[in-house]
Length: 417
Image (cartoon, rainbow, N blue to C red):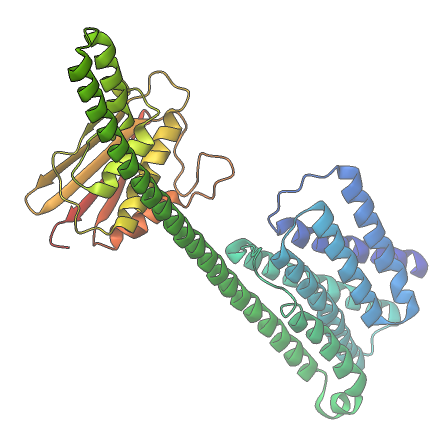
């Protein structure tokens, strides 16, 4: 009977262990979809390791092997996340801590109540399951509340804290026999709780570091995009200046040829002049950089699909690099949205009302707008973030409006800025 009960307890303990570890692993966000039989095989192997490794009598080795296998399982079958790997390593340090905390509590109760061995084992396994479930719920809560992967964050230093925690627990228990006899096992519980708090605090600290790294990476991308875009339009301006000079010279030569040879075919001459006009820049606004951007972005759109009236607005208070950032991004998004749609109509309006300059760009909406996300595959959705940052630099405001059919961006600047 005792053997059956102990076997039943061991089965429950193993089920709780695998269930808790699996619960934490699945709580970590990831985009990997592997076949179920692979995941089932990985967890069966994990259970076998958890069952047979303790027979070697080396708890530290058991925890290390289980942690390594769990990290490999998570990384290969569930997610490719550095922060997820740290959470798994930390969880196995918690697992070791739960084991020894349950052992200390059960030993203390056993010494006081003098219960039977079977009762002691049942009490030990029950305490371990309770502590393990509690730590699992705490870590799952932390993961769900603040988890953010950090692909640009190095984890070499991050795994030191949970690994050292496991080693400290092991050394503390080996060398602490005299301390336990004199002061009791409760200090081990206090020590364990302090380690849990320290690890959770470090996890939150790493989350903050990860967010700062991602923010810095985003800012670097934004600045790089701004510089490259400005350089592109400055080169384009030079090319337009060269083209204008060449077109002017060709036009003078045509006029001279026409006068000298009295060419009667006016239709041919007019066609040549029309072709030369098309090679030059169309005038949209007095702002030199904005005019170049409009010519570049709208050159592939038929004129009857573009309604542009900027009404002589003054944007001289905005630097060229910010003009480029704002309007190149907005126009690129609008043109990209209408690609392949015959009913596309782009409307650009600018006006000055009292001390305010207002620019509104609107276009049909073919794909539902999601704030903070790009509708273009392979893009990180930082275009509008870039625009907003540049607008706010001049104490301006950017408003996005959509009614399901049209998408509009309105920019408002105080001219005194």
